[in-house]
Length: 174
Length: 251
Image (cartoon, rainbow over the protein chains, first blue to last red):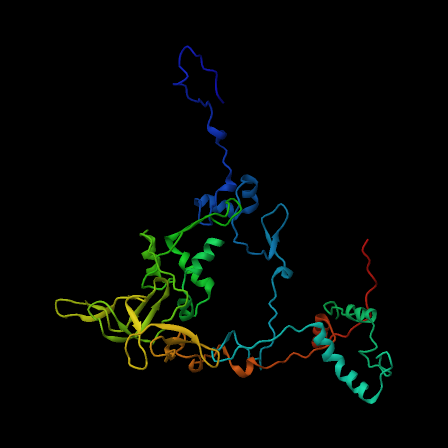
C-alpha cells in the first residue's frame, strides 16, 4: 500500500514505493510449489502422516501421491484407514497353456498382410454356402429368398437385437 | 511437434535401418540429457520446452551418450550437400580418392548418411596407442576417419575394378539397381547391406524364447460367427443367453 509521501521531503525521482506490510501479507500460493515427497522437515512429514489434521491445518498444500489408487478410505473425521476389499484390483489372467504367441515376432517371419474383415465378409462367411447350395438345387424363390430358411436366415433385425441383449451377468448367481 | 518431426527426419534412413530401434526411442534418446529443458508436467506449468534447433551429427550414433555430450556444446553449423538417392551400403568395395591412402580399395564398414560419410575399413586411418603404461608399450588401434561420399570415394566398376560414376536404373525385373555409366555393368547390393544391430541377415536371425515363430504367427484361428462380442464371451464362460431385459427409452 502506497502511503501518501509529503512532496516537500522527497522529489519524484527519489520516490520509491513503500510497503508498510510484507508483500502479499506473507501469503504464498502453495499450489504453485512442487513439493516432492522428500520435501520438508520431520515435523512436516509426521504431520503429513496424520493426513486429516494436516489437511485441516494446511488446506493449500497438495500432497503428491503419484496417482496411486487407494485401496480403502479414511473413516469420517478420523485418521483410521479402512481397507475396502472391492477396491483392491483383481488381475484376471487367462490360462496360457498351449498359447504360442509370444511378446515379440521373429525377424524370420514374412510380412503378414490381413485385410479388414468387413460386414460383407461376415455375410459371405455365414450365408454364402447355404445360398449357393439352394440356388443349385432350385430352392430359392423368384425374388431370391430361401424356401427353407435356416436359423440364421430367419433372423430379423429386431430378433437379432433382442438375442444380443439377452446376455446377462452371472456375478450374482449362487 | 513440427520441430521434433524435423529433428527426427534429419536422422538418416540408413541409420534407422541399421539400428533397428523404434523411432520414438531415437527421438527420445536424442532429446535427453542437457540438450534441452522441459517444464514439469503438472497443472501449475504450461507445457513449454527449450530445445536445440539442430544437431551436429558425429561418428557416434544419435541415441548414444557420447552424441549427447558432443551436442551439449554449440558448434558452427555443418552444411551437408543433400543427396537425393543414397548409393553407398555396408560391404561395398570403394576406392579412396584423397589422402595418404589415395588409390587403395577397401570395404565400407560404416555409413553415416547425415554427414554424407562412409568409413572404409583400414583406410584413411590414424593410429593411436591405447593403455600405454611404464611397463606395457600399449595397444595400437587404427581409427578410420570418415570420407565424404561425393568427392572422396568412388564405387568400383565390376568390369575392371576401377573407380566409376553410377546411376540408378531399372533392370528387366523392374528393380532399381546401380549401374556404372562407363561400362553399363550392374553393381550388386552387398549382403552386408541387410545387416542390422540384431542380425546379419533376416533369414539367419537367432530366435529367442520370446519370439513368435512363423508357424504360430500365420495361424488364423478366427471363426466368423453371427454373434456380438458379449455373446462370444458368454458362450466361452458357459453363461446361457436369457430373455432380453425390458425395453429402455430415451426421452
